[in-house]
Length: 317
Ligand code: 13P
Ligand code: SF4
Image 1 (cartoon, rainbow, N blue to C red):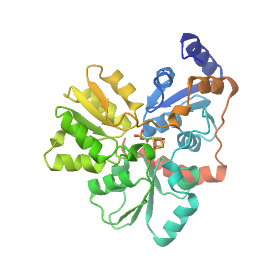
Image 2 (cartoon, protein in one colour):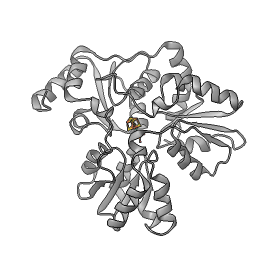
Image 3 (tube, protein in one colour):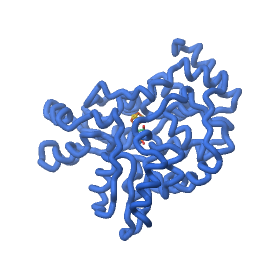
C-alpha cells in the first residue's frame, strides 16, 4: 500500500462512514501523522478521545494509548491498526508487581505514568504523562509517601523538580529513550554550541542535560526538558536556529512542520520505536475498512482505572 492520494481518500472516506476520528501520536510515521484528524502527545490525545463526539476512535499509537481512550470512553468503539504495537516501558511493571510494592508501603499514593497497562492503572491513584508529571506529584500532600512508576528517568526528573524526598521510583525504562545517552548528548552539544536542547524526560541523557547546564557547558536557557507536545510549543517560541532533539525520531516531523525555519537534528537518529512504526499505511487502511483491531478493557478494570486517568486529564491544563 502506497500512502498516495487514493489511499488517503479511501482512508478518510471509510473513517467518515464509520463515524471515526483518527488520532496519531507524535512518534507515528509522517504519512500517518498527516492523515490523522488530530496529532499530539499522550495527554492531548487522551483529552481529545474523552471529548470527541465520534462513535469510533482510531488510535494510531501504541496499545496502552488505545486502552486509555477505551477507559475514558467505554461506550465507544476503540480501534488500533495493529494490536501488537506494545511498549517496553508499559511492560516493565505488571499489576501483580505493583500490588506487591503497594503492600510494602501502606498509605502511599501511587502515581503511574500513562505508559502502563489498564491493569496497572486500576491499581493507581493518579496517572500522569510527561507533560503533567511534576504538577501531579505537586498536587499530593507533602506528608504522603509517593510510589512513582514505571519510568526511572521521568521519576528522577520529577523528584529533582519537586525536591520530594518521600518519593520511591520504580526502575523501569523505555528502551528507545534509555538508549539516548549522556556521552552522546554531550558530544552533540559540544559540536553544536548554538543549538537549543529539547530533551524528553524519559531519556537516559536527561540528567546529563542538567549537568551540562549546571556546569555552564550549555547555557541553562538552552536546555529544555519537555514532553513531545511541549516540544512543539517550544519550537514556536525559541529564537534558536538549530535544535538538538532527544526523543523518538518521529517527533522531528511535527517539529519541522511547526517551525520550518529551524534546523532540527536528532541527538540519536537510531532512536526509532518499532512498536510505533507497526502502524503502517496498510494497517490503517485495514483498520478503517474491517474495523480491526478492536481494543477491549474488561469493565471492572476500566471502572477502577477511570478515576486515575480522569484525575490525570484534569491536572496541568
Ligand atoms: P508523550 O507524548 O506524553 O511525551 O510520551 C512520549 C512517549 O514515549 C509515548 O510513548
Ligand atoms: Fe513505549 Fe518507548 Fe515506544 Fe514510547 S517510544 S511507545 S515509551 S517503547
